[in-house]
Each structure stands twice: as structure tokens, then as C-alpha cells.
Image (cartoon, rainbow, N blue to C red; front, side):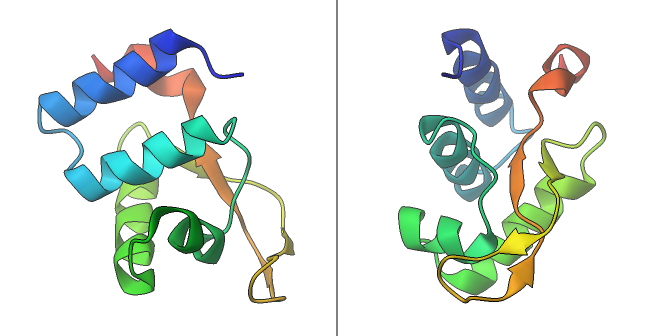
Length: 98
């Protein structure tokens, strides 16, 4: 289970403009699912955010310094059936973000 402190830290990022609303929605969804490593298609299905927007926001969150999201080892996506790199929230970087 993800700690309330983690969720609050990411809410602060949204409030101070470090991440936008769709980025926050993706992070929030990952945290609410227990921060399981999910594929972009799985995130799209769970959040209702369109695929192109999910891909763009995930890429933006991966590129931040420190990265908000990180990639896990390859696995098969439950939706597309393709082998991809799922992502999850980088809980280790929160202290460096503030």
C-alpha cells in the first residue's frame, strides 16, 4: 500500500505547477492501484485518458529530473498482448522534488 505521504507529495507537485492535471491523474491512478507497474494501454483503460495523451504525459514524467515515473522490466501488456516496458511511480525521488 502506498503511504498517504506519497500521495500528498504528488498533490503538492500538481499544486505548484510541476506536473499538470493529466500527469497528476496518471500518477494518482498508479498510486491508487498500489503503484503496480502498468503499461500505457493499461493506464489508458484505467483512467479514460486517450492513448496519445497518456503516451505524451508518461514521456514527460519519465523525462523530469528527477523522474516522476520509472520503467520496469519488460512484460506482456494485458490489453495489447505486446511485450512492453510498464511504468510505475518513482517513490524514491520525492524528497529531491521539493
